[in-house]
Structure formats: C-alpha cells, structure tokens
Amino acid sequence: MTYLGSRKDVLEAVRYDGVLRLLVEADLQRLQARADRIVEAHRDAIVAVARALQGRRHLTGDAVRVIFDAHRPVPVRALLCEKGTPFKELGVDDPEWADDDLVDFLVKHPILINRPIVVTPKGVKLCRPSEPVLELLPNPHIGCFVKEDGEVVDAAQGLHS
Image (cartoon, rainbow, N blue to C red; front, side, top):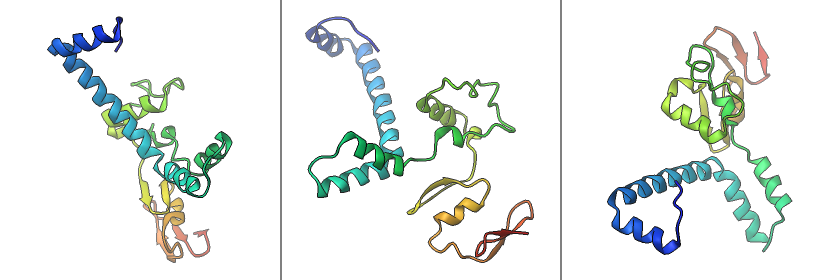
C-alpha cells in the first residue's frame, strides 16, 4: 500500500477515512502475520543468536550468518509436492516465486504440502523417504520397521531389506 503525502496528511487521512483505516489495518495484520511466520521459521536460529549474545556483547554479521546456516529450516521448495497436485496448473514451478509466495500457495492449497513433516526438539525434517525421521528421534535405535511400501528398514544398522 502506498500513499503519497506528508506524514501529517497520511495520519489525518487514516484517522478520518474509515475505509482507508480498514485497508491499513488489514495490511498491518497481513504484515504482522508474515513477520510471525518469518520469526517462527527461524526461531531456533534466533534463540541461538540470543544465547551467543549472552556470552558476548557483539556478534559480527559473519558470526550471525554461521549461526543461521547451522539452524536453517527446511527449504520451502522442499515442502512442495508435485505429483497428484495442481502444482503446474498454479504455476508453482516458476523459480521466481519467493519463499513467502510459496508459503501462501501452501496455505491456500494444502494439497501442495509434501508430507510428512516431522517436528521434534531435535529439529524439523521433511521425512520422505521415512529414514530421516530416525535423526529426530530421542532413541533412533528402534530396531526394524516396515515402510508403507513394504520395505523393511533395520534402524539399528541402517540396512534395507
């Protein structure tokens, strides 16, 4: 939303124009929701930066980047499911879409979400195939299990039958 004028004119317009006030409020709510999603997506990295700052007064940009890279969430594009979805029809395959745009697609069309996404205190992973879930379990040595397709996985040895 763009409004050209002095700060005083803008504030008066919002104060006295109910429709404009509603539009501004809706835009602010949209932006707040976007900020909330960004913070939630990077919560672990933000907490790690805060912990690092407890021990030091300053961090360089490179130090913050290293922390963020170590706590990178699952890339949004990795969450997209193409098969059996309107992926191509909606144009989601366009590489120009930003992460926020892709999240909007996922919210509007949940069928596009590649599943399962597993969240534990150890992290977040897209667990297709299912073996990556073992890295997120408190005790990954659960023995053998059978996947949906009938494949047997020996979690203790990482062997497939």
